[in-house]
Amino acid sequence: MTTAEPGVPSMPTAGRRDSRTSSPVWLRAESPRPARRAPLTLGRIVDAAVTLLDERGVEGLTMRGLAQQLDVTATALYWHVKTRDDVLDLAVDQIFGDVPIPDVSDDWLEDARLLARAWRAAMRRHPWAPNLVGRPMLGPNVLARTEFLQSALVRGGCHGLQLAVATRMLANYVIGAALTEATWHQTADPHARAAARDHIAARADTYPTLDASGHLDDTRWDDDLLFEEGLDGILRAAARTGLPE
Image 1 (cartoon, rainbow, N blue to C red):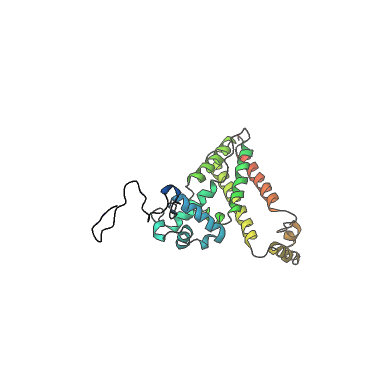
Image 2 (image 1 turned 90 degrees about the vertical axis):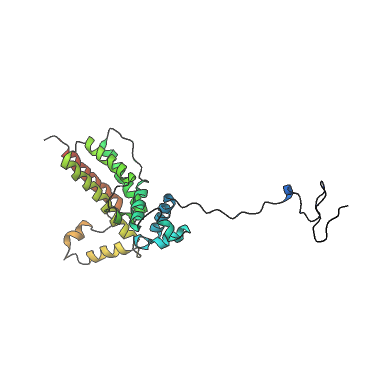
């Protein structure tokens, strides 16, 4: 038996469990801990930006919306990026990282063709991208793929001005094709191209060449065929520039 001063709780005797104590610690469930928020990183910011751009387009990307997507304050973003343009540049470079760099082969034409096809496919998956590719392209993913493209052209005999021209022709062609295709596919009316074709056909007297050539008739010339034929034409022109005079 223990004694205690009035008003002072009794201390349990050694070896005895206080009747007020809950079950043994080993039998008690661990108290749930609040989930820790993942740290904000540049990688998380860019991933979220690409998601928003895919959903809302360039005009739909705001720093406030991006912060909400990440469940942070807008101020927190500015520890990692200075401007919205920074985010756009990083997003463009990230999707270029999805473009596989082919293994170098003995066929420089095929190497360049593989890269161009993959580049177009990446921009078609992210239809906001072609509008931004005209910005300064200095990200590591962009530069690595441009390096591969130019090295293929050099192996084909292009140098100096011819190399610069061939690079620009290919880049502008791929970007332009992806932009045109993205514009058609983003329209709310799935029959928009057919309606445009009907508009030309109904005015065949005014536009006889356009009507005869099947201009805007995707049942005659689909996007893939047009792209491949145009790409081959540009690469053949590049190959000719590499021939000795």
